[in-house]
Image 1 (cartoon, helix red, strand yellow):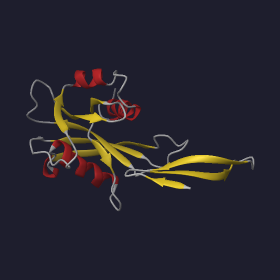
Image 2 (cartoon, helix red, strand yellow):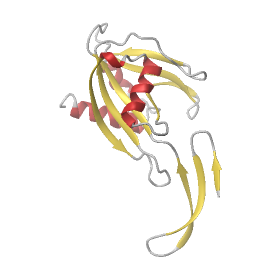
Image 3 (cartoon, helix red, strand yellow):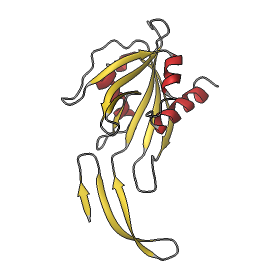
Image 4 (cartoon, one colour):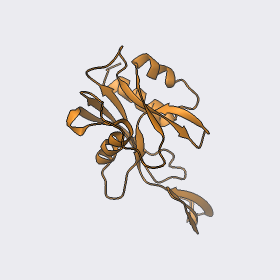
Length: 176
């Protein structure tokens, strides 16, 4: 028994536990997701060199600031997906990318979800191109300092996946 929605399918299935006991289980089949910490090397103003986005999130019913992110489309690699999402959301010019490094890949909640989240670090020379937003996207591009990003990580509405990405960035890229 399955119910389809635009970005996921919910299924109720009978499965057997390792001990052989049969039970009803709910699972969510969803596309993989990607996100990126984008750092601008040149032309940063007052040290505001991290590119983030502010957008309305329906789950919280409020505008939040987060790293650029989105869904991986069918047949697309996670790297191609994040570069596409960054082109759309923050105006990333692929010709200005200096470095790309995968920070982590993880399942958001294996208790009932089948997808994975892959997060990248992308260093760019500059980031001045226009956004290419979808019809229903209302996203504001923000340039933030390291200390401002650090403070956002303490907000209760900041996702655990974003907090994990920031910790990985600090360890892998900054060596902290």
